[in-house]
Each structure stands twice: as C-alpha cells, then as structure tokens.
Length: 432
Image 1: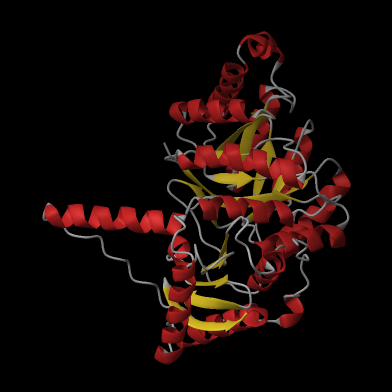
Image 2: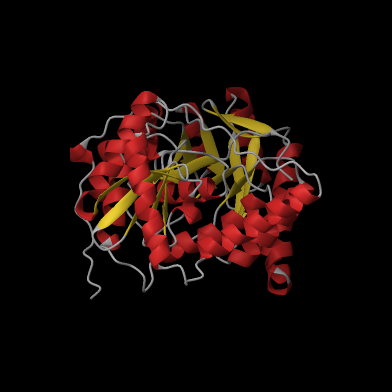
C-alpha cells in the first residue's frame, strides 16, 4: 500500500519506496530570522529531514529568501488563505509549498499556484484537516467524517491533476486517532501520491506522543505513509523529531542512534535502577551508532530477556554483570556498573568487535549461575522462554528441520563520548 509516486523536496525523496521522512515545523515567527534558524538547526541536529515554516505575511517572505539558502535541511513554506504568498514563496526558493486548496480562494487561484510551481519545479503538499473541510462536505461530515475527509482529499487531487500538476504529496489529518487511521487507509487505496501522516493538534508532549505513536504507528505498520510530523504543544520543535524517530525505530523502519531496553522493575529490584537508567539514557545521546543497550533490574531475569542486545547490565544487591550479545563479559561492583558498561562499549566500538576477556567472562558466568541457583524455585520469564525454546528445538530435531541461526552483527566504528554533552545527573532511587 506504499505510494507509487515519488517527489523530491530539496534533495529529500518522499514516496516511491524511499525511507519514511521525518519533518517538523518551527514555532517561531518566520520573520525573526535568528530565532527561526536556531530552531531549524535544532530540528536538523535531532534528525529532522525537512522543516516547515509559517508564511502568513510579506515580511516572512523576506526572511524566507535567506532561510532557504542557509538552512541545513530543505524548507517548506506553509501557506493559508493568501495565494499570492504561495507565489512569492515559490519565487523565494522554498523547496516545497504546503497548500490547502479549500481555503486558498478557489480553483483559479490554485491553478495559478500550480502553474508557477510547475515552472519552478517546486513540489507541493496539499491536503485537508478535519477542521477545514469544504462547505459542501459539512453535511457528509456529520454523517461519516472519514468519508468526508477522503472525499475532500480526492477532490483536491483531481483539481491538481486538472491543473496538470502531479508533483505533490497529500495529507489528511484529524484530531481523532481512529478517523486518521481509517481515512488514510482508505485514501491509500484510492491514490498513488505520497502520503504525509500526522495527528493534528495531538496535545502535549506526553499525550500527543502517545496519540501519534498509536495513530501513525498503526498506519506505518500497515505500510501506509511516506513522511510524518508529530504535532506537539511545545516550543521545542526538536522534541517532535525525537518522538518521530522513536516511532520509526520501534517499527524497524529507520535507524538512528542507540536503542535503550529497560525492564519496568518489580519487587525483585535490588539496585538503584531509576538513576542508572536515566544516566545511561543521557549518555547514549552522544552516540550515533544504532546499538541496543539493555538495563535489567535483576540478575534472575537477566540476560535471557535481552540476549539480542549488543550490550547490557543486570544487577543484584552489591554487584552486577555486564554482558554482550547474550554472553557475560564481567562482574563489577554495583556503583561502577554505568562507567564500566560504557568502557566496554567504547572498547568494543573502537575494535569493531566485542572484546572478551575469557577469565573475567568466566567469573561473570559463575556469579550469574550462583544468582540463578539461589532463585532456582522461581519460574521467571527467562526460564519459561528457555523451556519453550528447548522444547521447540527438540521438536525441530525430531522432525529433521534445521535450527535457526543467529545473524551476523555489523562492523562498528568508534565514537567518542563527550562528557559535557552527556550529563550524569538523574532521578533518585527512593524505593525502601
């Protein structure tokens, strides 16, 4: 169901099988050049592929001329109501124009913008939000809001095609998560143009992130969507980009930086995991490699639940274990877990492979075996999984089937850790 057509926004490919593109929108007045560029750089540093800026006035056009030249990522001009601003934005060099054909002043003005965009080779994003449907669809909206949204989008697509303009992507957004999912699924069956996904006016960083993860994650898992924007009520636009990346990483659609795996803790917890997880999360921000790092709250459930992780730690009362790829590396004092974990990560990344000291690994394995023996009567998730895996392996051998083999780990390069950029302050552990 992925779109067949592809557009090019300032060198960033959208649709046609290209990776899902992450975008955000500046929260500043575009006319304030310094503030806008500061935010664009923050968005780019966080991993934003493209950025949108609001252009409601002529003085925003003046700043736009400079912004599109100096921005580290392509810039989309967001236009509403005034089609002359769209024309001026194209002339200013915007890499893409966002347009709602329903509020720009009629088909003739849409056609004028399309002609100018065609001449300049400028793509457009067209679309509709649930709060801005054309008047003739208000009745249908009351009866079936999803059908009304899709009808509006299809009508806009047909209008652009009549204008002999096909260099566009389409967005269809709603504040309702179920409606956004249903309408985009239906629209994807009707058109071949790239789809821009988002939950409009999603809310705060907390609630908005959850809504977006549910709505956009569902669509992306279905193969629907070519670019996403997380709409959060925050002045820090880079936070939208971070959420977008977490969604894409969770679905294995794109990789960027480390993935942190952490257990939810329970009554078996015997060390200061709150602080440890916060500290590790902060320090991992300095790494660019897509490594998986696991933090597990007790050695009982330890390695088995995160044997796929590149590196990890698991702890007990006074000691803990550092492991890699499901195998013990070494036992360390609990208060040294974080420092020694990153020492092992840096050492292995520098060498391009996991460095294992056989003696230390043996001591770690012995310690882990002792912990497991002390808790031998407890049927943990790890033991249940091990029993199930053993039963499946035995059944496969009985039937003469080949056992699955682990895939090879990619070669990794060294990455330096900047302590100033990776503060170690974290939440305090308060459990008695």
